[in-house]
Length: 436
Image 1 (spheres, one colour):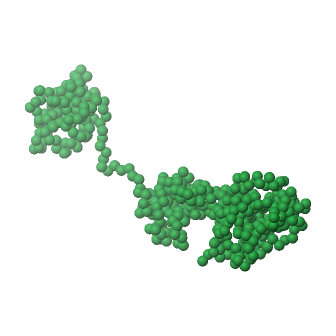
Image 2: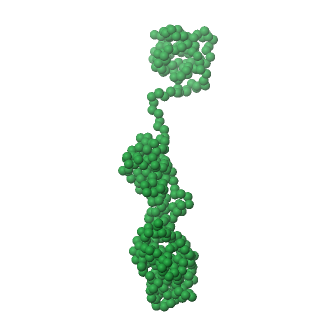
Image 3: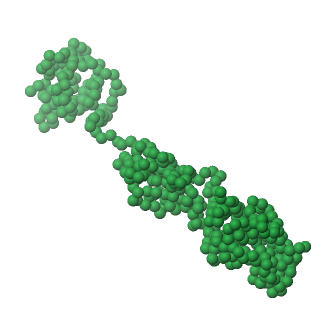
């Protein structure tokens, strides 16, 4: 049995005489100086590779020896790195000793640090948020991928902005990719694969702002809502969508007819209106569902020729020129197209005491503050014919007039309310331009 085995077996409490305490200094000296421990021709202070392997197997015994050596003032590092010792006692000065590497002296209870094996799995790092890491797309979508714009990445999601073929604005819709097995996968069969763009969100008819619409889409399609801003951003600063304003547009007459309205309002079926108009168009209801106005065009009914029972005093309580609105030059002009709010004192059978109307017109109510019928419409060119943006109930007849008041002062006070200001802003946003 070689000396190291003898020393290790000597530490076994089952075989060692308890009355004989181990001499740590003598044990360490013999370990480091005994020539019989090595059988190769290397210098005595170099440990062969095979002995290094056997040394790992002897770790438990060495730990016990280390504890004994501490009592003699000698510390042994028991990790798998280099051996660190205190200065060798004088009695071993001529012995062959390994070269010691200076290090911080560990405490007697320090647990050895094991170096991980080279084959240990390495933790996966983050996946780069790039289009090159998008996978699983169908061939037709792969062709569009190079032209898509990276909108954002957050959590395990990537958003790509795509444009419709007939449009030039980016963001007609968003393709969503989900991180799966270290690749961002677009699965067109999943409900979360595609989200409408800001244009669609801004044009929704659900009484929602563009951002509220996007948040609702995330919730319904299974995408974490708190990631929306990081993935899609927000409407362009200063845009109508960012200001909570929507736009209506129609091109059916050869003219582009459009107006803006609050996001909390809603487009409605024009047939529900009492506008006395047969024209095409749309109607508007406010946030409470109350009908506010109807846009109509292509109508042939000219209510200004209607008979009335009696002339009555009227007053223009608010007016704003709208010279950009087109009118038919063949029709005798009665005035520049304008926004107007007019109140008329009703005759006894006209539903009074005061009825009022609001909208666009190029008619005049009468002469010297006395009128009969005021038709809130403009005689337009071509297919526009008579077009209006009001609840087109002319003043001057039974049950006519959109609003009823007790006095002129009460009608005037209405112009200072927020509801009136909102409606005026909608009506005066109307634009009608010829399509070339």
